[in-house]
Length: 66
Image: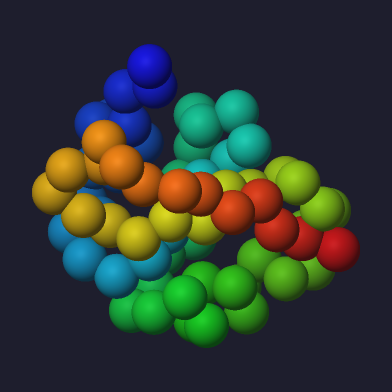
């Protein structure tokens, strides 16, 4: 299991992009479109997009990039 507590510190709502190794917060925004725009030029598979929620047990993530 991956503990995202430290990585997501300060992200309380919206969407985030996290590095593919789940160690670094790459971008955050109010919605998916905003975050995707911030990371769209990164290499494919370099980030994982996910909504910020209180409980991450049933979250499906997406790997994106060019």
